[in-house]
Length: 489
Image (cartoon, rainbow, N blue to C red; front, top):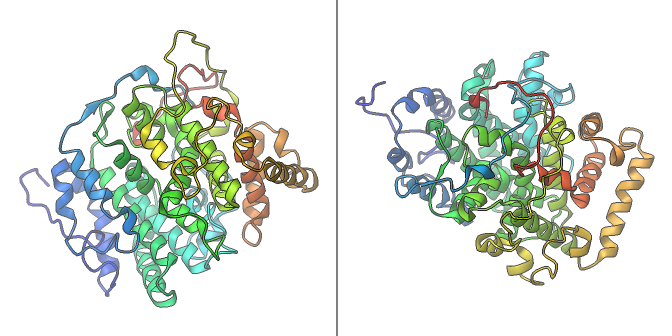
């Protein structure tokens, strides 16, 4: 396809009939994914708005985020900025790998939806692709068909996202597209108008964002558009942070705890557990859509103090309001990141040196980002409590209105690690030593999410300093390094 060849901009994903599937929608969804390589050859930023049919239904249920994707797409057609200070971007890390398996706990879950052989490749796909959603959702509490449906939408998103290393994945594309249409039908037929529709809608929004991301060529340098808040919201969509948070919220119903803005705050804090672990690899690939990078780009300073302060405040809001779903989600995301062999996150964490002290460095105000302050539920929520009087004190316990409740939650975790043979010693293990315990928790998760929830709760309640070193360029990685392709990001 040459640049002069007219592009067919009619798709199922961006078209008018996605939520009224007919016999041709599944095959058209498959074709949407197959044409990505050809679309990329002729793609220009100004083409994005042309993909959206005026009656495309995505955003009709999650109206809070409806216009974000198209507005952020248009933003790349206007003023584009260069990253202000490349020295803020940490890069040294172990190599990024492709689809390599860690264990054998998750293929069973994916086989409930897809016919798959028992091979290392499909174990890796079950962990990395299907498992990203499955590991972050409690299938014992939520509607099983909805969890399987969201996992399948996540698989659909991988076809553009993993374009450069799909391997055998195209073998299941047609089945995947069919399962996605069945999920959409399930929500409309089996659930009354409510949060299930919103979750489904948010997931389809995620696929749209990922699809558009991949059409852009890999950046040769770090650049970004003008609107920080809009870029953050876009990242909450493209990372699946928003749909995952909406679904996790349903694990504590009657009533749901958190309004749309509070859900976005939770989505931000949980997505940070992914983005801070990916930060060094993303920087090597000039990837702007990482929450750590977005804030640094717009503030011109190291984002760690501002984002750490924000996350502690969000998790304090969760403890204060009994919204344990928000703590579980963030911890599950970190646990998944540690478990994936592809990222080598445990190795990176274990081989980090403390950040170098720089007394002459720029002093960063933890409440120095007005956009984050506007998202902070302790500052702008229904029951605001105001700024922390010691903003550089990142103790979650100190920020909770009821420290005894924090102590009870932490003691429950410690007692579990003493009593449970599969989780024993998790609290004193190195990051790499924690991987088998996470795997065992996944094995139990088919019928009981307690071990995974306890592991997740503990890692967030303690929020160790070392985790935040990941985004500090003065924290040196001392482990093995090899060359790797930015196409693996």
